[in-house]
Image (cartoon, helix red, strand yellow):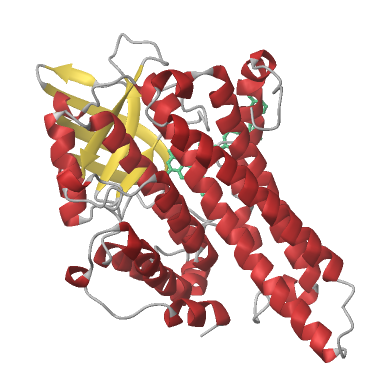
Length: 408
Ligand SMILES: Cc1cc2nc3c(=O)[nH]c(=O)nc-3n(C[C@H](O)[C@H](O)[C@H](O)COP(=O)(O)OP(=O)(O)OC[C@H]3O[C@@H](n4cnc5c(N)ncnc54)[C@H](O)[C@@H]3O)c2cc1C
């Protein structure tokens, strides 16, 4: 058991889900429990590129998969602050678990925000809370990369019945999920950017694997490619158009949750570097090793990373129910820049941590190895490519005003 696993274990007691009082004060303990399970299998999950089953089973047992569902539908009504804290804690334990959790919670946020009031989506919220369903995401299609606002596959309508066949080149944990939230073209005669969002569950679709997931990092997300075939009811389409859902929930919540998971990975690497520097200083009678400067650099970028996330969290939370504010050029440009900034800072932090540890950090074994963290965090700038995001927001950035004061 490494230091991290031990520290997680110290903070938890063995409990069953019934013993929890479903309120926010229990989130810390419940998340620590999932983190302990995730840390215990992180190396194996990475080595074998396998799904973190134990961690997700523990998340189910702790009823965290439905934490964001409002209490009247059987969940805990967790806030964006609660959820991003969970992503950070899980990121410190196992990157893949944190990213799976972050993606799932992004889909849940869409369901809660844009499904409420629709009979099908209300029922799905209840099911997520009671069955602790895990929802995956399908946005990437064919050779379209991270161009989420364009869909090729269209929803086919036959009366109230609908169907969809989608070349989904990447669906993280597609094989393990209980449902998928997917974008699609509204209808055969609709433009590629006229999209809808659908929530579909295991019994309505089949997945035929088309691509494997043999990657440098984030191996446990099992983000294989599939041909997705779905048949169901038109009720499964979210009542609001995807353009609104994308701007108001999908993008902000994804960027906040992903960034928090990456910050967790970065924090885990900094923790290892700190242990290394302490050990080296002790061994040298208190003399700081030359790598200490890199450790300071890692701490500095981690501080910036946390600051940029929390500032954006505050902004999002302040305008969460204000459609106009969320759709404004200024907010859209900020929340997109968050993803770019956070992903770059996370990589920089882990790189500095590795340089602080030197060979001990570069090794794949030992207590100070940050190899896994580095491979995992390198996915951050390409998970919706930063170049694409920057190109897309160039005009909005140009049009949004330069702040007049520090807190504008
Ligand atoms: C860990 C992980 C998990 C993922 N999970 C899922 C999932 O569950 N579901 C899902 O649907 N997708 C998922 N994805 C895919 C993700 O959403 C993006 O589709 C994918 O990261 C884009 O990959 P790409 O680099 O091939 O595509 P592109 O975005 O097309 O980029 C390809 C290249 O083109 C360049 N480029 C593209 N556009 C521009 C531009 N406008 N200006 C300049 N350069 C540009 C990029 O810099 C890059 O070099 C996941 C990705 C990762 C890394």
